[in-house]
Image (tube, rainbow, N blue to C red; front, top):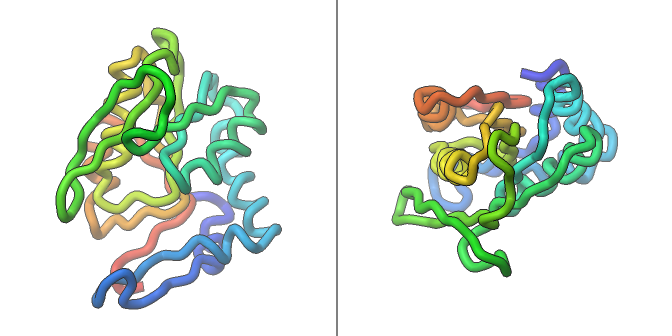
Length: 181
């Protein structure tokens, strides 16, 4: 967790029973609207990764872009979007993953990375871990090396961070919420 983790967590809004009864949605909008909190969020990632030799930030569509772009800028590395199927205009590779009620697919440009590039994957939240694992598979298939996966919020009760660890990837979360918080 980040040194700002408790503060960041305090700014995130919990919306009960959304999008369905029994779900506590963790809304990062107040975090993004608060300039001091947003700066601390980006600084949390910059401080963690500034001395790592990264070639690119791979950010997951769409909220991962919010953190990924300023982080790539601050670290002086490239920004690569991992998009939902059908959103990239050039040749792509894709990976399908399971959702609670079906499947989804993410894509990456086939020329996004060079062999051995060191990549940090960024998203806003880890729930079941499916999207993050799909992105990691794409990066590995394209020749990149996943250095770590990073997120604003981890929901450990849903098992995603455990699944990512079990797949061999490190996970960094600025903060986490259990189901009863």
